[in-house]
Image 1: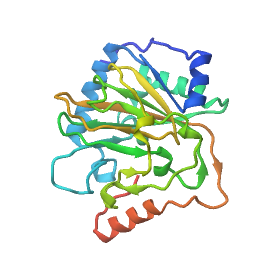
Image 2: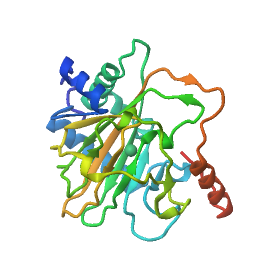
Image 3: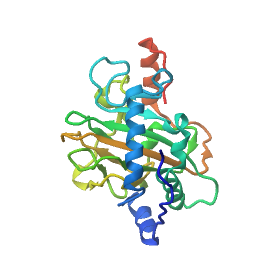
Length: 266
Ligand code: NI
């Protein structure tokens, strides 16, 4: 049963100012230990079911579509579409509230979720990227991603690492991992890892990052899984005169069609 959702938090002015300067923010808690336990059960069940695979809502982010080997970075998109009760949680409510504070908008903010699983010992790296590279090229975005681990997130298990101030850059050129357009995961080159700030977290903590903040997580070399649940909060968007170029997305669609794989690309 879902625990009571009465855990409320607010961001201090200094935290909001730090987010504006750096493009990311880390907080120790966004939900309760009790709720983390409840979420783990739902999380594990969705991965066992490979929830939504037939609709392109479950796939391995760091390996080619339809590969038969062991999964290294599987993800479930839209878990709250399957389990609407997730939206009643402390986690979801606080993510939306704090995300709205960071976006600094009065208009309605929408939220969507995904879960990214990094298996113990062989979970793959998520290489350096900006989230905007994945998203709708038709609009100017205004989004913040709220990343919560359900397990201890350390550098060795794959906690978030950010390049401070990179959210003020333009969107960079991205390419597919291993230069294979059948791999959904993207990477951008020429990032100086010595500038990275790692944000280790206990279960139920959270980081926030802007859609242009450069970020990465290392491979999971520990004996524990690293389960993460991400909520993306989006404020109003503005339509572009013409779509922003995303050659990597075009390549992916073409490669999927050429391979005869019948799946929608999200
Ligand atoms: Ni990302």
